[in-house]
Length: 138
Image (tube, rainbow, N blue to C red):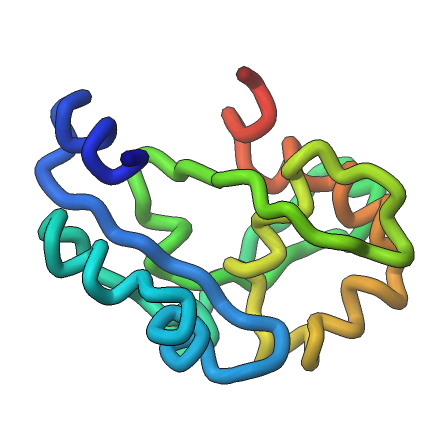
């Protein structure tokens, strides 16, 4: 439904992307039955764990002073983050801001993005609005 709404809003191309913290991202997408949805809607998929990387530098970071993220995600004209229902031992509530961990570089932060957790996941979540202007504004 989200892909359809993006097309109705005027998107000429919709790319669905993520970077699994553990298993191979493309395997996870197949197991979750996303492939038929992508094919039916004309959307494409990007594995952010296999993407080129860019660095976002933060002026006043409560977490890390910089984030290495997938280049494809950094070039998006609009970034849509969908809430994922899951349990997390370290973050009591993330208000969906933790979703963008999937665009951070597993090559830099480890599996499952351990360096972000060592920094203090609450501080990393608090960095999200500074790292991605416009995200969490709605």
